[in-house]
Length: 459
Image (tube, rainbow, N blue to C red; front, side, top):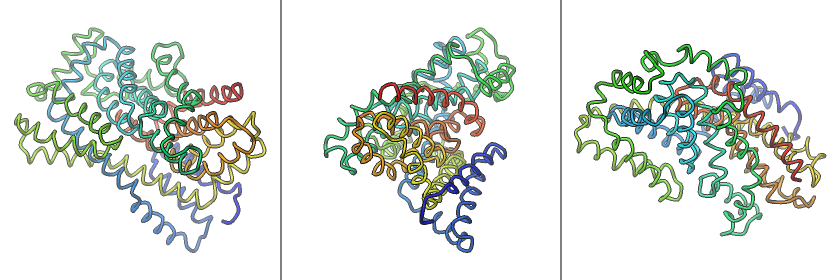
């Protein structure tokens, strides 16, 4: 295609419909990509799919993601097998006295792990799901809390991977001087309205101030009846917290014999600490953590080395569905780029981009793009060179426009059915991906609506 047109919207619509109907996000993304390629050139569709998929697999970001997710799965497998995760759950139940306090503990943990949304999504869900299961909280609710404290929290903290990435984009596009990127980024933090609203909504939902809505209400009602909660983790639940601890102890007798809290806390603290030390690089943080954790467990003779390797391989395998979904999303995003979808959306809304309405229009346009393509970072590398000169031309407030862009990015990361953050939040919480996406969607749309109104009022 040489000119942007409305037909570029067809593949995203196909993907969203198929994802809901089939509940197979990878299949939906592949079909959506094929539909887009057939629209581009039916004769060369197969060759183009081959080239794009190979290009995606050769991309450094995809290689990084495979290594990070797979190695994190290996670490989680060790934490579970050595009894460390069980020990944390048992101790957490002494603090979490009921459903609300267990979810609030999840929220606080999500806020605390602000460095990277991948690290956040995988760590918090995996850590807390055994605790929330005990109080018959749906995995969908857990995944919502995790997802709401992943990208939205990381966006608001200038020491996160998001700040590093977007700060680099600001420098590359001449919006910030070299060395001043984080300073410019921090000026925009008060205007990252979606992230603020999404985070504030979580405790309101937990405490019941904001009622359960639609699919989430149904999921919670089923969970209270024991439906959707793993049988071995929900049996014999009682209101007594002591009994909940006893039930957990009965389930993990083997792990209880060697499950020590330090075997969970030490690797997790090392992972966070090393990630910060290596300039917010989760992969280097994981490498350093595994380098110390394996000998740390070996010295304690928790299991033979061969068994440890087997557990790590099984843990890596457990992350393949999440990895496959993100790879398919990258392929789909590339097809949307060839269809000139970003240019079409921006051009369609550009007549409404006045100084007063620019932040709100930018948020809506970029939120739609991020939601449609599942790209919370890549799409902005394409759109910032278009949006920021326009903002400067109409005399709009630059930090406010940056805040609108980051708000749209965090919305796309949380709301899109097949974004990396949504996929990993569902994976960490042990929740079906489509169920997680559907149950949290009403809350993300409420937060987005409040954000649009906020940008109009502020501008």
